[in-house]
Picture (cartoon, helix red, strand yellow):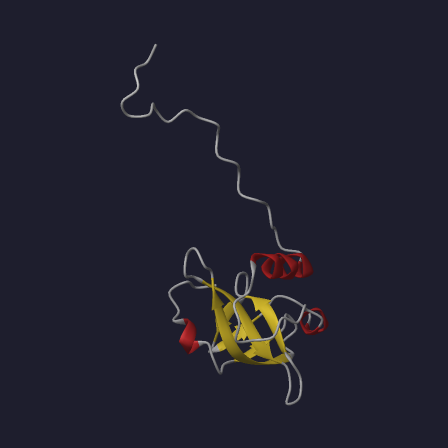
Length: 123
């Protein structure tokens, strides 16, 4: 997804699945805590339905609509965490697993000695 898009401009736009079937309207956009990049969109799937979370990467904004590269049925079956609250890392992990997206953990920092404590002598 284009990262230069203002997430506020996504709210209210229509969203479609990989086949061009309408999913609903973007209700909220969730930003990555570390980078501030838009990461998830909550899509209102119908008048009395709940919001379904979809990943903004690898989705695309085409002609003013969000194209989500997943089937509508998979999107509607996404875990429901409610909207208006922060997504926890565990909830994000559940969403990544639901969509089959890579969730590889970041590599561990190497075990290094970064120096000596000030005021101590090296033997």
